[in-house]
Amino acid sequence: MSVRVRFAPSPTGFLHIGGLRTALYNYLFARHHGGTFVLRIEDTDQNRYVEGAEHDIITSLEWAGMTIDEGPHKPGDVGPYRQSERKEMYHKYAKQLVDDGHAYYAFDTTEEIDEMRERLKKSGNPSPSYDSITRQSMKNSLTLPQDEVEKRLAAGDEYVIRLKVPRRETVKFEDLVRGIVSFETAGLDDQVLMKSDGMPTYHLANVVDDHTMGITHVIRGEEWLSSAPKHMLLYKAFGWEPPTMAHLPLIMSPSGGKLSKRKAESEGIPINTKDYIIGNYEPNALINFLAYLGWSPGDDSEIHSMEELCKLFTLDRVSKGGAVFNHKKLMWYNEHYIRESSVEELLVRVKILMQDAGFEVVDDNYLKTVIELLHDRVSKVDEFVSMGAFFYQAPEEYDPNALKKWKDDSAGFVKAYQAKIEEFSEEDFVAANLKSALEETVSENEVGFGKVMMPVRIATTGQGFGPDLFASLELLGKQETLNRIDKALEKLN
Ligand code: GLU
Image (cartoon, rainbow, N blue to C red; front, side, top):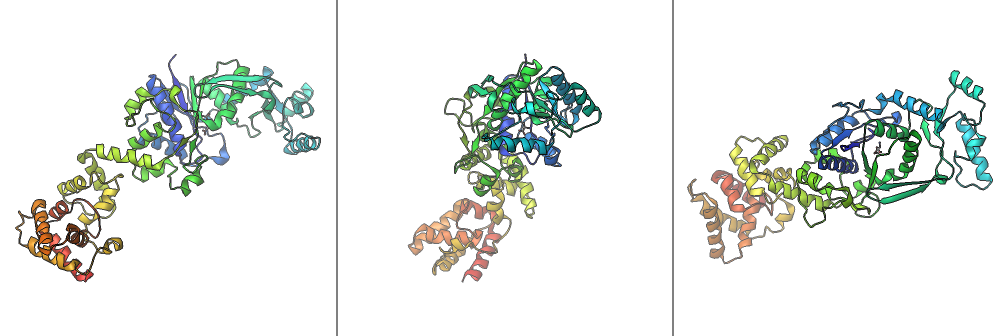
């Protein structure tokens, strides 16, 4: 039997980073086994539906390098791939459960259910629910005479369909991450399967779809573990073989606790995949990082391409304990993938970013040198723009922090240096000569290297740090360098 897995997000907002990791583990598992990766949109909750969310999910997965084999935009044989388009199917299966005695119609109003809860609370039951005991005193197809049930259905009375959860049963299954999981049905209520608005609940739709879509493995976040026993009961009621389960560990915030949207925000961690796209992160860095957020190949290797991850990934190496989101580690990966990119690859991207920032890029070779000079200094591609802006624009302001190093004697040293480099012909205006000139200035004035170098750097770049100064001046060219020094001497004196 070939592996079929699904990523089944609800379109309730932008795809967050936890969802992306769930999708990734499904994708890696599918590819590892030569299986199929399905995208199913779980949009039965109309109140929480967000326009554009499906599009965001698909573009996010594509950006991250996951090819969807079947989905709403790429139908296979088991569609539709949006739950809202599968309503009839859920009706049919819910009815089948009622006919087979595993589910029932319940006509109780909200008030009647509240009343039941109040009554039971008063008699000492702290958490009363609609279950195997209380259902006996409620208005449902198990307690009402058959003809009244039919009359109510025919009259279009509001009803829900509930699962008839057995009174005392132990539900056991093997989870590939957590081992044997066991639940007592005594703690479960008679789960609603069909809501009064004619929509299925998550539980029914999820089980019907996983079965009818031929899903072999359900790989999802730990927050769904408590739903699994209800799903197991449903599989049993239908007489279907359940898929193999694997519940992934939670993603934790560095300060402890689940990485919620609020926590992420307060800790400076982008939460939506979209933020990483807009934030110019490297997709293969994010993927590599997320793969290790709850999994490891069992050795000390850390850098792997998507292709390698597909080969390496197995569920038995997924950890049970929560995985802490370490943004520094992500930046370490990002930096690595920037280093790995060729200057040619970077050129295309940096050119666009430079233009977006309002710089005119007329000479690709010039930009190429800028990229070479900054290549091992940046950890995110947009830093080529922030760190390289001075190659395109003379400083208007000088970094106040750097200016702390501009002393009373600085202007004199800069002037002395300027006098030397003015003498160079255009051809001689190269890094090696520019450096010798600075060394001469240093020794003639009997001061430390930094005493001259720093003010020259500030005058020409506006900053106290940056790429190799002499190579930078060579690239700026003689005229531009001299102009900048003139302007700085004027402004800073
Ligand atoms: N629709 C659920 C979600 O939003 C799917 C959970 C599952 O994979 O069963 O994550």
